[in-house]
Image (cartoon, rainbow over all chains, first blue to last red; front, side, top):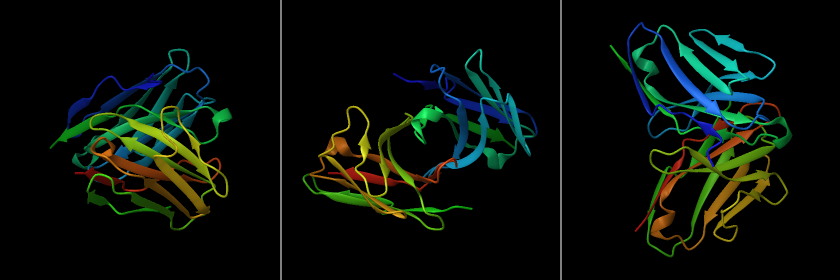
Length: 113
Length: 114
């Protein structure tokens, strides 16, 4: 049972425009969320996080939005750059399960120069 | 930033061979290490969680005797795929975490069983 879902396997965006990557989850106990970025043949790299006490967290060009009622989070990248082309995974955990995270299937972002 | 080293990055071996994969946290002591498996076009699937000095906690459906995990120190965990068969071919990734901090991942090991 996939508790974290990324329904768009791929996304293409023009350089300079906004990239929006979406993630939905089913477990209402999840209270901490992460986004990871992954290049081919490399491990995922931590990008940004958000806890359920917030609905927005911003770090430079990256902003994560959390809508708890909809069990939905999104990652906004603006402006998008060619170097942002990678696979992005969202992950979620519940505080009572320690560091155990559940991952989405990933969205492959291509930023077109 | 924190670095997790995973070795080897790619291994090819014959069916029936046992393969050991190492995961080291290089600049921090990880209270917990995780082992994931990724099939093509699928998400990272958690296989097991290990805390230093204690037995690993395996996810449902993961064979403990098939995937042996040893977490001997705060900086080293190993995954041994015993008597590997072609269906075990996959991409295995470890991660390490300090309490309350995001996991840091290794670069993964591509295992190919002939």
